[in-house]
Length: 462
Image 1 (cartoon, rainbow, N blue to C red):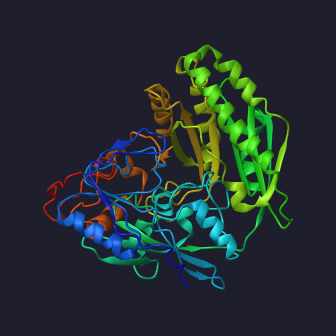
Image 2 (image 1 turned 90 degrees about the vertical axis):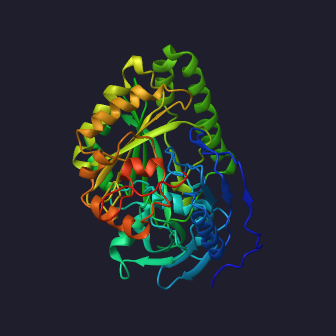
Image 3 (image 1 turned 120 degrees about the horizontal axis):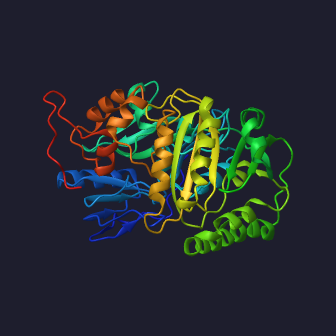
């Protein structure tokens, strides 16, 4: 049974509204902003926008670093669509509105005796935004979040609500699972779930050489393995997690606050500020940050271990490479990050994800290693670093994370995704007029074209 709405606010509209993303790097002033709270409100908002000739973009929590949601047409803010619509405990599935934030979804699932099988390392995103960009966690045996989808309801420019599943329309379903916002406005998602489980996680430092030599083994033996490396150090900070039947034994609220807020955000933020103004301090502070404080342990319900607090703002690029190329890719990034002229103070992050079959998933048909690089968000200091890493990743057929910085366009990406053309065919079918296009989707997918003549359609106001 669906959750009852506590209120049914009117669809409110604002003009000359200023929107910015979480990291404050992407900004726009939509001509119209709509806050739908219901399926009917979402359909109405889409039809009103397209009837007026405006492009439509859906914005969630703004946790993408790319301009995927940017528009000066009509922006739909969907956080008000946050109900659980159906719970099927025997079938291990749940149908939810797409504007729900992952953290809220996890807590509600827990109350129903359910859980998601894997999660990323933050839970502030809306479900729609997380699946549309192929958000992932880590675990060589587990796939990304969009691979846990069993059905999607999506509203197209004509106001039609399409119910997509593997049975009803396999091509559209495999496209919409990672759709980058280019196919329509997602109303609901049916997720496959599992019984609640606990995770025991140990955070510890290990010699970098040992981790590089053994990371394949660690990824295979541990349920969830990831590691971080600060430039100019020979130490890796490892997060080693195992699923367990043991009872939850969470750290105290004070200990959690000290670790996840004070140390990982406030102290890290102070380091970032110092290194921005005194770049010569980077090697010494990196060594201090990498020294760690022994071994820490956390045993709790899965969703409380997977996600951590992120208050420190930064910019990020992440690439997905075949797992067979993981060590070479990581070593290449470290060689770049250790260049003094690039002034890299943030760690690189390495995670492992199993293959899936969504057309535009970076892990499409290949077990993968994700390598993320971070930089201070102020100014353009990240550019030479990110450019060098991006050039390196091209050697391994690296695919960029759709929600993180990259410079690739459709000419680059077409050869990286075997079903790229099939995705474009679905886009032409669901959004033939390009109502959900913006500069970002046209850069990475190419412009929407006439199916026969090949001419670009009339550009809507973006």
